Length: 236
Ligand code: CA
Image: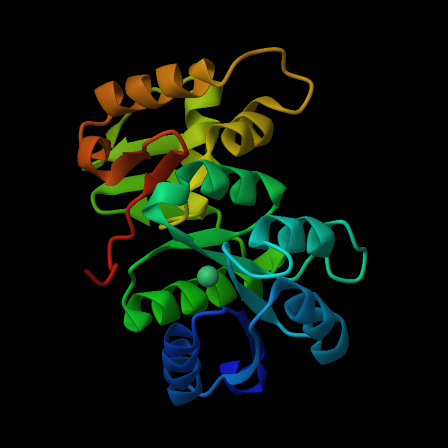
C-alpha cells in the first residue's frame, strides 16, 4: 500500500480563504498539495502536476467545475484521477451532473475541513483496495453478508433476498459513506443493457428495508441524487 505522505492533492478553488484552509488541513495530515484558482489553471495543473486526487470547486472563473470535470474525464491520461467536488446547496442539480460526469464524491459548502479530510482519506482507502483484497464477507452491525455462500444473516438468522436485492446490498456495503446515484446502482446491479427506470432502484431499496429493518436508518436517501449507506464509524 502506498503511504499517504507521497500523495499529492490538487485543490481548485477561487475562494482564497477556503483554499488556504483546505491546503493547511491536508498538509497537516501529511499530504502534498498544489493549488489553482481558476478552472483553466486547474486543468493545466492536472496535466503538469499529475495529482493523485483532485478537489474541485463547482463555481470557478474562466471555466466552471462541470466543464473542468468533463475534460478531465474525457482525457485518457486523467480519466482515473479521483475527484471530490465542492458544491453549494443551491447547486444541487449541478452536483448530480458532477456525479454523473464521474466525480467520485462531493462535499457541500459550508463544510468543515475535518470532514473534507475524512472524505479524502476514505476515498484513498477505497482506491487502495486491490481486487484481491475484496473481502468475501461484509459486516454491518448485526448484519453479515457472505458472498461465497450467497448468504445474508442478521443476528445469525438467514434473510432471504432476491438476486437483485442481494446485488444492491452488496454494492452499498462495498461503498459505505459514498453517495450512489440511482443510475450508478442501476448500471452496477442491473447492467447497462437493462431496460428499466431508476424507479426500480427505489422499489428495491424499499424492499431491502422491509426485509432488514436495521437498514431503515442506515440507508439514507439523498434527495434527487440517490442513496448512501451510512458509515458505521463515520465522524459526526
Ligand atoms: Ca467558487
